[in-house]
Amino acid sequence: FYFTNLCCAVAFIEKLDGPALNLSPEEFEEYMQGRRPPPHSGVEGCEGLCRARTNQQLLAEVTRRQEKLAEGVCAMQAELSQWVQAVQSQVDDIQAKVPLHITSTESDI
Image (cartoon, rainbow, N blue to C red; front, side):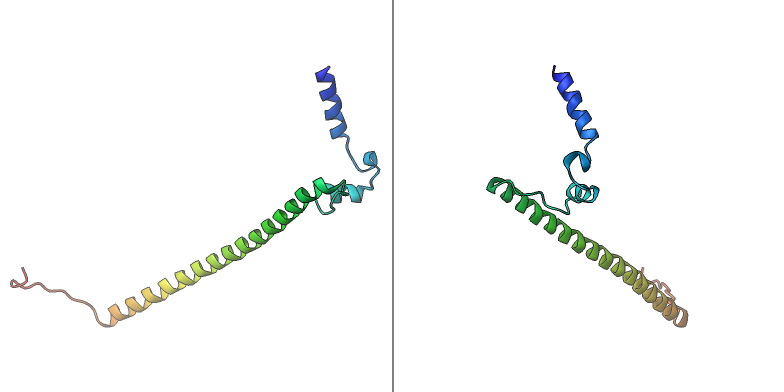
């Protein structure tokens, strides 16, 4: 009995589409992707839906901020790499102009 009910439920879900719910394919896709809110059935569902929408908006904002931060990190890494190369080039130029010769004397030992 339970197995039959489970099989029926699975078959219903597998064949679920817009026409089966008296919806156009566009409406069905909008509902499934969360772009269209479901019709309100009362006050009890509103709070949860409102919270879910708010959380979805917050998540989208955090995602945008994280992407912007990642871009900034990449730019800073490139800038740091260029700075290191510039400093190394300056050090090499100075060493080429004024070589450093260390000589030890017996008094230093």
